[in-house]
Length: 120
Length: 280
View 1 (cartoon, each protein chain N blue to C red):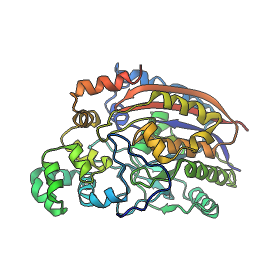
View 2: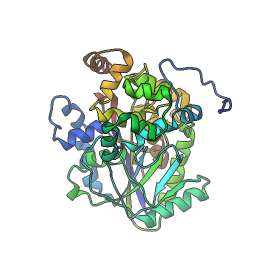
View 3: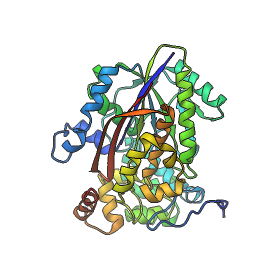
View 4: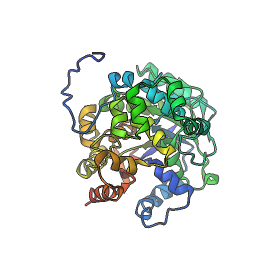
């Protein structure tokens, strides 16, 4: 256990991962790779040879599978932080509604309707 | 002495910047959002600030997990925007006021807020989008800027209470600056939203409306929430309410609400705008 116990009641929030020290250590290489996608030439290098790019950043098998499958929930489980994952998703033209739909098992239209209905 | 005119809280969603870049402000989807902003621009035109202190959170442009500061203050002559990974057009640099920045840094550290000091700081959408909303025409933007950045990426985050107290220290620093400058604060981010996990798409209108009311006259009640409670009530990215609390701390105890606007949704987010004038 890397993280000491808090004094506050930090009960689990359903469907939510708190990106704490433990997750940050778990996902460091994955997030470092996604951070590199700020630069267009790195996005191009990734697209040119995904496996080589993942290898360069030292991703483990679980992370590489999640990248290969473009699976956001798996990426989060493997330590991905959504701020950096958004840069990965952007390579494929996916925005936060697209990844929201994927994570909630909805179509993008259903997900957009859910967002709109929050204003009712 | 410097005068704090007031503060403006606004959401900072990247999609807003993209909509501005393609001129979509009058589209059916965007119009109800952009229609909230003219009163804030009118106010800025009437009060003519010299400096905008922009309290925002970096989204992995300037800071990576190798070293995440809790509170960071820019002290540069200018602040550059850069590609955040989506290839949006990069905006022109924003002029800084390093002498004023160092005054704030010296003052808040003396006040026991041990900030990270940045002589280079790339500013992302959370800094640029609110400025684009306030000054759509850069040729009319004659202010200098001071970025103050707060960590929302890596837990543990500073507590809402700590952010509010940090804001109070910023307020003391600004008021003590010997130059006769007019300062406006911008707090960017929020309101409720969550991008990640099976709870993605979470929006809490009831809590947002509570925030927009309480932050005016009883901000201590919001500042008493724990970070965890804030995640539960506002979503993992809704913690950006911390920026609003920091700004509120920097304003005086008495403020007057000049304008407010709330719209659901912009992208995955409940968008809020609040303009508070300092009651002298």
